[in-house]
Amino acid sequence: MSLFDHVAIKSNNVSADVEKYRQLGFKVEACFEDWGMVRDERGIGIALLGPGSHHPTHFAIRVEKLEDLQQAAQEENRPLQEHRDRTISFYTHGAQGIALEYIWYPPDFN
Image (cartoon, rainbow, N blue to C red):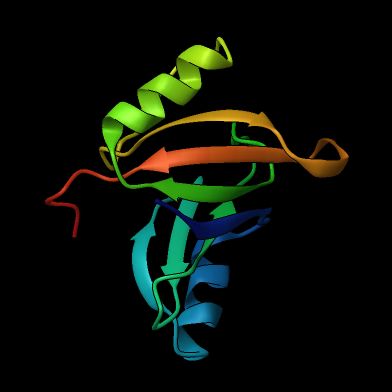
């Protein structure tokens, strides 16, 4: 099963933008100089990509099983990336050339 997970947008000031979303009722999941993540009460996220981020703006789909992510990446001949928060993902092309990330979260992810 796959679910919409987050949208990632550019940010000129990650900490200020994270704070603004916190004031709007979002839960802060991560806040670094170059990257932040906030989520609404349903778990839908907004990733904030700071200056110098190597990640493209994108939409992300959560994949429930690591094996499904590995198979999809292999079928598309895409490398898997492990991120600092322990998630694993790969990027592909979505509609209109917008990047689409397939992402898996470890079972003990908080």
